[in-house]
Length: 461
Image (cartoon, rainbow, N blue to C red; front, side, top):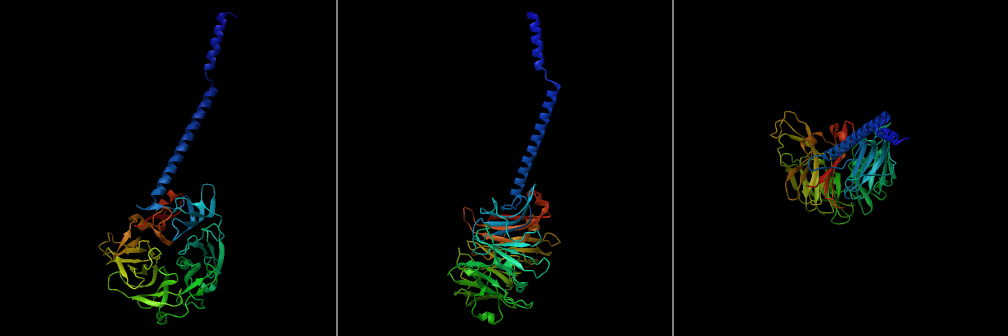
């Protein structure tokens, strides 16, 4: 081949290498389309994650933070330690894109991180009130689980009670409540007000009865986490002999074996008694009756609370009374806290117990209505609101812990209500509120339910 021919052949071959085939163009086009789709999907996912995380963080009133477990949950129960800062348990069903998980979870940092635990032995069947989690007072890492089987085949079904002393890592069956307690022993409420002291569990119980009367409660002690109980009292007090019945109790942290208790009778008013021998005998320390102040009626069915941080301080409230009682001398004298707003056409009730802060502040919560005719009423109807009230030390005027109007209108309080948690583990003292809100916010937590559980907290005011 001469030089001219070689040059022509070389040019032809070189030119052919640079010309892409139709197949190559198709492949390139497909790759470009796939990359574009992938980038769009990733971008949407990132955008969705950002939106969900931002929405989750903002799904609270101003000044509050979210501790709710992320994801769609059903029949979720929470228990908040009253004395171990940051410790909470949750049990229920968590639904993800691929599966539903029925477990318990634990957080030790106030809900910033949740860790899944082993499957709990108690019933979790997603039915209403199928079980409850309870954190007793001074229990530290101790929690109870109570199965509510009354909604099963019979209203007289027994209720198993379980306990964990290691914050949900392991559970042990304590007892199963018999028919004798039906209607007279609200185990959820009584165990949440129960107190551990010197390795023993103290609670208010109703005696075993064969009729449907409502007997007076009595203070009892258990050496085996509630499997069996023994009355602490050796003889009736002077008030009990006059027909007064015990309504609530709290530890007196000034000495190891001292206690306070609240009593009521058929007429308005409450009395307070004190014991220095671990509940064997009781002495009257004060009696309060109805006052003429608006909203300051001293009713009955009260609650009281004390704290080791302020020995001798007591916070108390009465059902239906729009007031908080506070004592700084072991119940001998009392300071009455009243609202700072118009209550001339105000109606409300207290759904959960009183709490006491490490600084001596008293907290309670109420569902309330501002009725037409009140100067604080902006409308002609009277919707219910929810708010948390605070009475600071040395004051006589209660203030409302801010929640925001949209939350006051939408919140439904769980049986857990709200808990005061002392400072510790690098966390500030805080109020933790377990609420149920309208499902309008549910999608932010990955739920399409009509209502959504919400666990929120804020630093104590």
